[in-house]
Length: 525
Image (tube, rainbow, N blue to C red; front, top):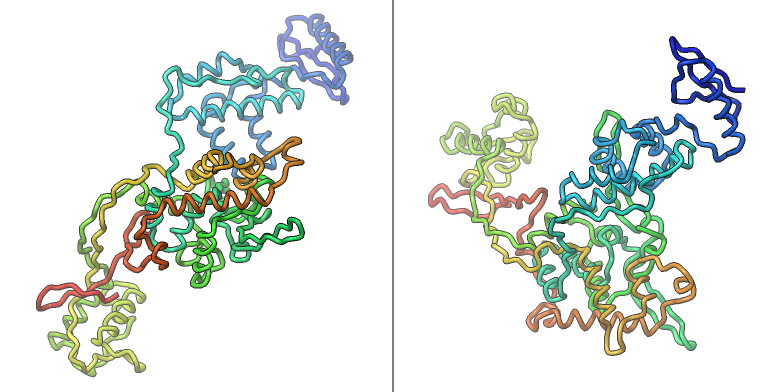
């Protein structure tokens, strides 16, 4: 039975819930009789509603508190969790953290959305969708009765910002972009994306054991074998996600994991020119992953885009310039000066690394670097137990770091990134060949798109579709290359003359020595 509970000068209505515990109505009453009537009425509603009864106080829970509880119960992929945290932290919590979950209305949400930056319209749509998901979960927990924004769609700003469509490019343009890449592996990444439609994460995760795998189809007692890339269902994609740190903030987490969906674990068919290029690449490539960095590590998306962006968007030229000397170069120049002035004579033992580090106020590794350079130039002899001044007549100039000149590039397809290759492959398959568009089932299987329903279950890839696709991509490749290109001459491009860009756009520095007599520069490393 319900009862009235006195709290100072007012009364609260306490009622018995289905689990035997007591709840409290949010309203306050001036008399004991009114509180008792309200408690009995609530118990009657519970008996009639049964398990469908909604806690009257549940709607008073702040949105921020419920969102934290709901997020803690989710087991989604790290990328999904990271995106949800971003939407909550950036959009929803600043606006609705202390709003009761029962106090939302669609007009109020639209009013808030209109005050946001038009450039964030996509994120705002995602935030509203997440808000609806969280409120629907509150209904499931019997905290609120209805979700006022369920299946509501915001039409966006009245004057939407100019949307930047996903840039895609024709094969001839992509071939030119690929020729600007720094290594053969990078060039192949561009070509694989353009002529197979693979995702960036899938390309980065290709292991040797899954590259150029033989896929055999048997038709009319005849075997037809194709060389394919196999995307593993467990480790077929390279992921970059964020996770919260215990001390606050977030950090980037990278790992090999499943591809985007179950349909993305597939075999990817390739045109003959790509098969040939990959065969030649694997012969000389020393690393496990086919499209890794030159050192064998996997790409971070930001670093990869720093490589690709200048090739597609163009870049200004940068003249060669001399950099200020580093600490080890200053030490090397000083020791060299002592030798030239006769302060250090031939066969004389030089101070130890510890003594020199103390004298130059530098670390031992820095002094060691200077000694190694001087030994390479024949100034010092480090072959014995102690370092001595060499007896030879070597007189190199002081070490100088010079940034080589960088050639300017005209834009080819500004804004093009690897995902643009998926757009072009899809368009090319729709455009098709002389027989028309390729079958939808092949298009979806090649791109790793889900294909549900009866058609997805009972439609399969046929031999003719594979042959049409490989021939179509080969034809577009041949139309995209120039007659004087390396492929027409049956030779690989020369990568040795290309300027390497590493890190955050920093160009590889080349160590040169300056001749004391003429001031000319010559390469030493």
